[in-house]
Length: 382
Ligand SMILES: C[S@@+](CC[C@H](N)C(=O)[O-])C[C@H]1O[C@@H](n2cnc3c(N)ncnc32)[C@H](O)[C@@H]1O
Image 1 (cartoon, rainbow, N blue to C red):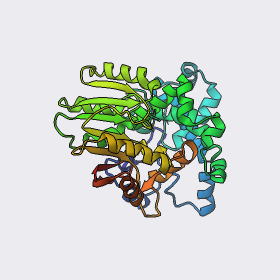
Image 2 (spheres, rainbow, N blue to C red):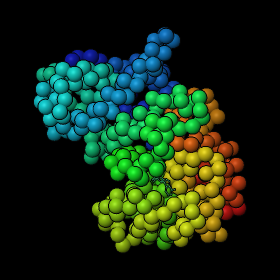
Image 3 (spheres, rainbow, N blue to C red):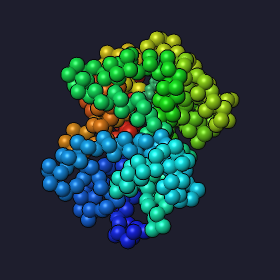
């Protein structure tokens, strides 16, 4: 943890090393938290989950934590970090370019600064911090589109988490009037927000995909591959591979755009279809990234049985998913599981549940590479 001094003269401690651990690079969330617990509390690193405050105070912070989330997401929506990318701006200029009321925006920025997003300099102008910079559209591993997706689609559903707990079914269906993927098919704007959000969140899964030893010259079919963010990243780093993005037809134009922009039209195709049907494109290795966790066991089994039909006898199925730990500490997968509870019929699974599900579809796990945010499961026909 690097120590320094802010423009206002506060002693500050930056938590970049802990952020790195959370991004999965160090792979161990628990040890990152342990590391932070042992350090002096930092004004710009006031983590909701790690604090020495009394229990009632800690509870209060969790109860109101949604406002911090909303503030971060609206900062992304207003592109504040993009407006500050060139040079710092005063409040009235920032409010003018982002279409906001200056006084109200100043109140939001005051809170965001206290948790590490944006910094007001000694001359009163606002600048990006490393965390707010991650909300820039073009930042490496940008969180901007994910935050917009959360604000527009995930947050409204999460408001009825209680309804999900009472009924056991997804709040999304009640709030938006139909299941997630049907809604996205019918509402192009929402479909765009979802695809962009997935692509933004796919950076970690892409890293995991790049780490896998894909057989030389193989055709990789990315099932439920969305706009192809992961497959195009893989093909760019592996010129010997060809690929097919297999997803619902309404995703086609976004996938074609991404494939063309990556200059991969010669090696990558889009195939529109339904993974609950049996007409899967032919390939050597099949990738299911963040797909099975969207579905209850019955539906997940149908997808995996189709995968079993499609995967050649000497082929492989690669899954990029959360594998929940047995420990009681904080784990990002436990938060994502609540996303699944409110948005879909699915859930995040533990090691045993993955083995049982894959076994029921006549796959066996060849390797499981665990990681805090995304684990890689390599399965082969049993
Ligand atoms: C949670 S997203 C995962 C996207 C991507 N694989 C990733 O890791 O970022 C699930 C994907 O499954 C696709 N999908 C949902 N139902 C489908 C179906 N019946 N057939 C094919 N694709 C489907 C969605 O369109 C979406 O792109």
